[in-house]
Image 1 (tube, rainbow, N blue to C red):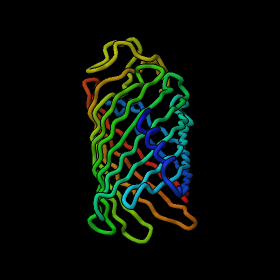
Image 2 (image 1 turned 180 degrees about the vertical axis):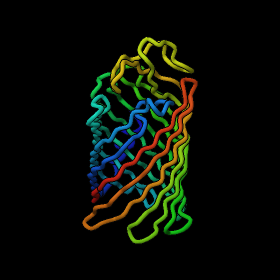
Image 3 (image 1 turned 90 degrees about the vertical axis):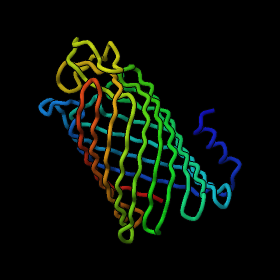
Image 4 (image 1 turned 120 degrees about the vertical axis):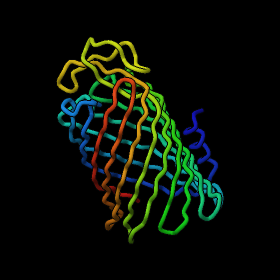
Length: 273
C-alpha cells in the first residue's frame, strides 16, 4: 500500500469528518518553456489554469489531524498545445502538533497526467515532510523536504527529484498574507537540442524524444541538474470564501547539458469552504 492510501485508510477509523472543497482559476506567463540558455532561443508563453479539490479532515486526537482528498488540475497553453496538461490524483496530509507553536506535516500524493504530446503522459508519486514553527501569531516559518518520482510514457520526461527549502508567511492585515519561499532542487530536468545532435550531457539519455513543440525540429532528453528557485507571493481574502492569489517565481537551473533561467508570473482567484 502506498503512503497516500495508508493515510487515507486511517480516516476510516477516525470520527467526525469535516468536509473541505476548493476551486481556483488563474492565468500566467512563463518566460523560458524551452529551457534554453540562449535568450534568443527561449520560448515564452501564456497559459490558463484550473484546479479543484475535494476532501475531508479528521481529528485523530487533540494534536493530530488527517486530511484525505481528490485533486484535479489543468493547464492550457493556447500557443503550445503539446504542453497543455490535465491531471487527477489523490492526496493526504497527516499533521502532528509538537507544541503550541511547532507542528510536523507529512503529505504524500499520487497523480496521473495527460498532455497534448502523449509522450509526456505520466504517473507521479510524491511526498513532502514539513516542519512548521509559528513564533508569533501572524508569522509562520516552514522548512521542508520533498521527493517526486515521475514515470512518463517517454523516458525523456521521467525523473527523480529531491526538493529542500524553507518559506516564511506573514499576515500583514486581516485576510492578507505575504509569503517568500526558497527551494533547492536536485534531480532530472528536461532539455531540448536540435534533432540528431546526439549526446545528452551529464546524466542525459543517449536518445531523445523527437518533437517540434517550439516550432523547430528538436528532441527532448533528460539530464541531471541543480536548480535554485525563489518565490514571493501574496494572498488577499475577499468575501464569500474567495481569495485573490498572485505570485512570481525565479528559477536558475545548472547542468552539464547547459544552464538557463526562467521567470514565471501567475494570478487568479480561489474559493474555499
